[in-house]
Image (tube, rainbow, N blue to C red; front, side, top):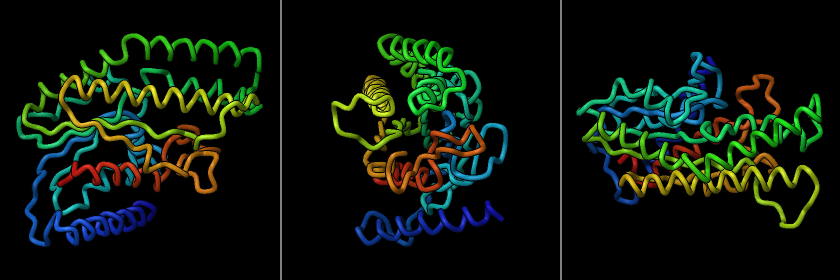
Length: 277
């Protein structure tokens, strides 16, 4: 029942956007299918984690942005092979098997796990908000996680992203390839605050900003499309009245991921860039 409800809701969402596009003469009721073979790659953000009930161990849900695109008239067949925990290397090693010369479109959300972002929010976030089980151990783990992320950003991350994109280009030589960024977990706060939660918010958003910049640079280097999603999430961070980021879920894997509305925001960002047209 939950899946059918989600399908009805995001079907209506996709239909509304399609109607808007037609009213702006971007499409027509008789529009032919333009994307026959669309494959979504990446990590938990692409799989749909946080958007509803898990359908498998990779964290696929009925609200992943590729699932929403599946309701569009311009898209014929969608396969989501993204998997929670995947790094750029994981995408190359285990997600390219279905790509071939017939693939029309590939979308990718990956790079966050290369930074160990899960360790950052677990240890640094818990410490900042006074929820660390063992503050001394968590402080050490936070420092290690921060150092690792910084090393990745200043070193191999862009090369790893470029390697992944080139592998996708080789496997699907005729496909349009689109890489996405990540939302800020928190809405911006005033500068100069020194309390632990504020310092963590600064850290988390700065890392997201630099991660996105690195993904964009890799897209430019390889000639693929980069889609930013931060504008769509503006005003809906964890510290907002209407957060589109899951926090406090008993299903721990869902925390710090987009909820159903957040995955719709991902779809809206891709749609606005004519990815699905």
